[in-house]
Length: 356
Image (tube, rainbow, N blue to C red; front, side, top):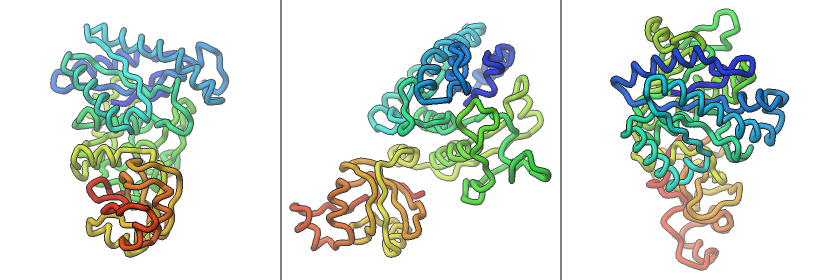
């Protein structure tokens, strides 16, 4: 369950009564389910304590300082709220790199599993005190989907400040709530606004749809409901109001990790022939390459794009960026002269690739 800053904080301070009501609901849920919380709020709490402008988001340095101070308050809030029910809270601070690197991802998954075995409620947040602008989630919606994937969760619940996804900006006349989404398509994404209405958070509806895309590919159901009210879960269930995203497939553990990764080191562009081959389950071959962007090493994650720049997928590359440039568009018989060694079977093998 993900809780955003705008729900947890008001006028620089925590909404303690609201949080206690939510925790009462979590206690009820724990009778049948294990719970992981992804909680925003550290930057907002720290900025208020330090008196920083723009709620701590005037600069990266301000955000990092605010997070360092606010994370202490955030952990205390959850510890006390859960402690009222004699439930132990655990703090987990992660960065994008922790879930992009395969070994660190497995370590995080093992920690979550062990905490749940002990009846602990993990409270997860991005480690904004060390995250950089270039390498960070930037919102806890996508983080929640990745944490759910690591924990092999059944469902993700995103508490928002709106009832769910509307077919247009909900402030416009005639906007209608979309109650069920059977696959996040470009048409669905076009409904979203990337703006965060509260000014506290860093996400928005677009980030929630990106989270839904991560979840749906690994067999996880995701829902968006309005968390602004007291006891928001009961309210959403009683009213049947929210947006439910249905899972689309259930990939293998390794491909699920690949599909959820968010920070490719480069981009490989391919021709129409390669596009057709990929649609039939083929690998990316050097003969189909038309352009190489970025600097990367063998084993790095790269995005794969078609002739019009359309995103086709992503995977682990078998060559460095310099080697990809050297064999760009060349057939297998021509590659050894450029590489100085026998070429590999593919630039990106189908076993290490996921389609968009």
